[in-house]
Image 1 (cartoon, helix red, strand yellow):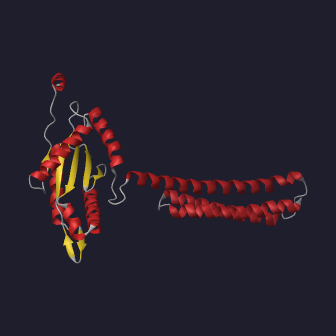
Image 2: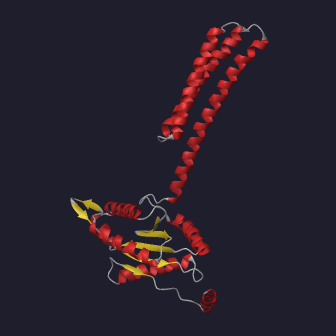
Image 3: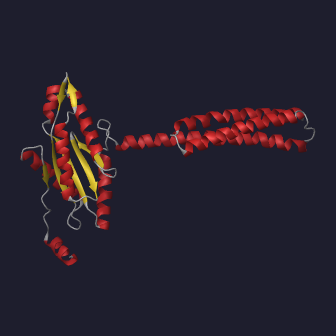
Length: 286
């Protein structure tokens, strides 16, 4: 009986040592903060219990002579197993959550430019459009295209063209607010969704982007700095008159006008054409 009690205590202490490994793995992956300090505190508690197991084994070594005296060693043993299972499951859950987050990020992110992709644009456009209509909020969109981008690829090669795309995406991403969203629409076209922004604000931002992009080199080749310009089309959602698809189409036409009118400029989309029913509805709501 005493040997069994000794086995349960010593083996329980070893199990506690094993529990330290998933805890340490999880702790090292966490950023510095309260959560990380909490797991460090748990590691300290496990070490404390480990010392307690050994101290108990030292005091009561071979003293268990009856089944009733096996309760404490059994509780120690199964308690250590519980700690190991909980710590292992916590580390495994953290791995799975991290993996899912990476998959979700890859699913909505363009691998070249590092901004959101077209698939995610369709989802966000509907959400932001519905919110703007429901609460009567301003909502604008910018459609951006690099001027003469084909010439960059033909002159310097596609690898340099990729650098230009990456630099432009980073510049635009760093120039908008945290709740604005930047997407790769296709090819070298970029779309920026601007919640709570009217057309005047979107035009002002577009003009600033045109200036910033034109003043800064976006890539280098053989010691030469490569600069480009952009054209921007802007449209603002007109609730009760159009849906987000029509707003995007107007921004696309405005971008086409910017290119026709000399490039390196911002064009505002023409107001949507009202049908008779829409006009009557606006009059009634007014």
